[in-house]
Length: 325
Image 1 (cartoon, rainbow, N blue to C red):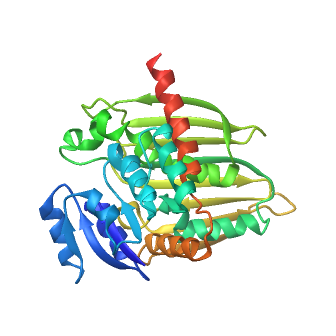
Image 2 (image 1 turned 180 degrees about the vertical axis):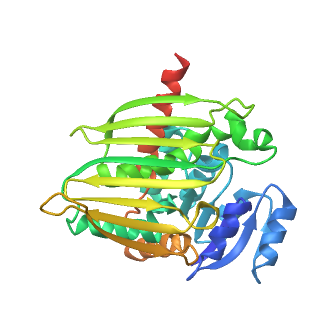
């Protein structure tokens, strides 16, 4: 497969480093300097400033879209219309409806579209999913998740602070990862309760989002995404009738990735506790991309795909609409 990437920021560097089994042919960015800097790292890749040229290029089979939120869906639609397979960086769009045209184009041309919810592919989550599928948790009850960082100097001036470009604040940024993971384990949510606030940053979008999501069966997810976590943190707890799983850290500044399984004993005393630690480099980007190549080889519908992104985005939209009333 031959790949073109549109948007050459920090995430793009992670994406292209994970292109095992694929050749990078073109790097595109509105900044030629950024495009050339990334292309220079990969012999044979060229730089461009026009994403339309990328999606029409004969030497591009697959397009990665890692631009700001306001152009994700438009570029994905163009790529899918041109018959290119597409990996769209999360959240996929600013609003769910923006992805309708890309979904229709993918169905019309056969181009496959995957959404970059790479957290599903962290080692701890892969292991947790396996434990769930083995039945060791029993019936699931609820989830508690927290995710946050503290921004950086000048964060209020970046594109994420501009609602026209970003579509929203922290709930749409890290919050959609928590929503996607909660849906992955509990299923669709039918009730949304929330509070959003801007506590610290001088910006027009929220820096904190608090969610209580409930499924039709009554399973709940309590989620908190924050840009005022002065020590970067990630915590995701899955509670079943027979056991609890805790995933802490994502590597790097978020701390060592760790999965803890606490299984009940018949006497209901201290649980049987097993801990897996993953101090090695994060391989979620590579495993995610390899899975997408397998989707393409098998002509298998990607998961997470556009419907998953739209489900998460509708929850965020509901919160924003209720807040504006």
